[in-house]
Image (cartoon, rainbow, N blue to C red):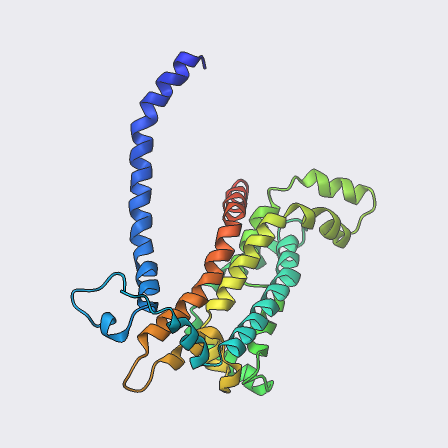
Length: 285
């Protein structure tokens, strides 16, 4: 395009671009209001929380709520328990999930597509259907009140959704690379380790992030399998702020804010990778 044509194009799309950005800002503000309210509630006094009309910003802010929230429950122990479960899940997913995805995308064998459809169909099964059978199995294994039921399943495939993401990303890698390696005498495991894995780092980061968020925010799993309060996770420990007839709302919101911060930070530093990997995932398949 010439400079004149570029100028005309910019003028033509100026108003739609501005309107689009304004709409995005409005939608973003709507989604940020609950987070802002949670934060302001965490630095309020109980009387300010119950005030009507609502007080959007306390005067003065009660920052000591964060210190009280951390000391109200064994926050450090719950954080360590949560990080242990998150680390175990991430390791398990990264070891097993890419292998499964590679086998159903790059290795040709009889029944491969049927098995992949079978794996995807497990996403249609709601958790309450498998909750009782899984509890019985883990109980027979003696894993109740341990972290094992929350970690070990990640080493057996890593989840249908993660397998699907990785498979679709693997399909974007040209077959010529694998064929050339096979001609040179490379094994399937060698092709997987030396060629495929270095090319799929973005999607591995995304899968790690999704796994971290799932384990970090998981409430139902720890509620079912963990009995000892010393083994509680942060998501489960937040209920400790709720008394029988009285709820420590400032402390609960302060603790919730602390719990939410790591997920926001993780998403902030990986958002570009997420967009890149998800965009490439849909290019072929």
